[in-house]
Image 1 (cartoon, rainbow, N blue to C red):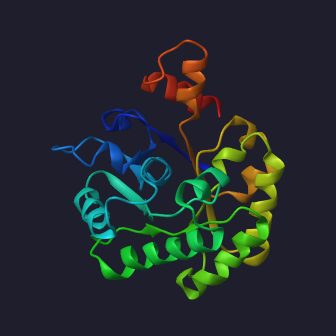
Image 2: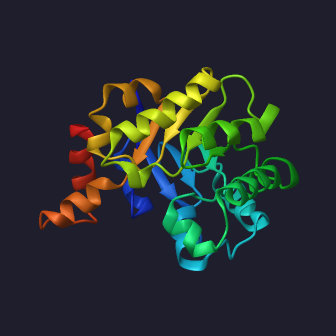
Image 3: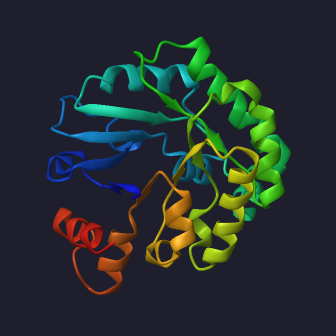
Length: 233
């Protein structure tokens, strides 16, 4: 079964969930700790790059945030500062898929090797758009991806309406490295309806509950909405 991490707007709500997915953007200015069980710290990559065209905070700042929060609850991983490869993101930066892939590996190296992250597991992220591009990115990482590495699969959240496209990406990755334990970012019900997608993933996260609640006229910030949606998934 896929281990599911519920994305939350408010870190204080994490205590209500076994597994939570929390963006560094929501805790960067926080002065006190918050109760949380198992959790993944997200780099807030999509929001940050879409807003700024890059990372206004360097890897050293993110590493300091990881180290600061590592002992708060059970942080299982901190997602590396990747560069998404959807068309809208390429247009925002003016760069190519290959350049985004290179920058993603460079950021991973900075966090994993150059800065003190308090012993946290830094989750590498595979980027691309076509299945072949993800395979190419695996090869670019080389031996950085050890046996059974826990790896994020980026640039899939905008393809929830086409589960077949997500299946093709995951199958290509598994064909190249069947040992990798894959994390799916920002998946929705449509993706989870694919038994193949579910079978290929190790973990996943989503904040689709918030959009669903808002669309149906309910509270898009309520952890109870998140709880209900997570239970249904």
